[in-house]
Image (cartoon, rainbow, N blue to C red):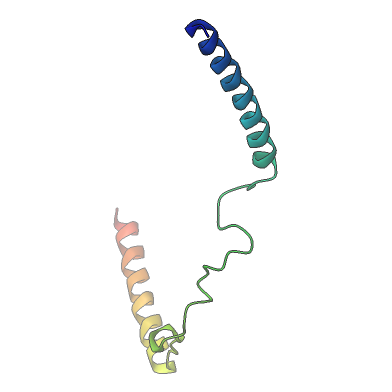
Length: 86
C-alpha cells in the first residue's frame, strides 16, 4: 500500500470521527446545564453536612438588642452631625 493512500484513509477516518463527535457534543450540550450553579440531584449540599454546636442559631437577649440599637442610633447621630457640617 502506498503511503499517500494510507494517509488519505487516515484523514478520512479522522474526518468521520470529528463529525460523529460534533454530533454527539451538540446533543449533550443542548440537554446539559442551563446556567451556573450546582446541578440538580447533586448530593453535595450544605444541608447534608452534620449539624455541629456552632451551626446552631444564636439568640440575642433583649438587653443585647437594646445595646446594639443604642450604639447604632449614636453612630447615625454622629454621621448626621458630620454631614450637616460639611
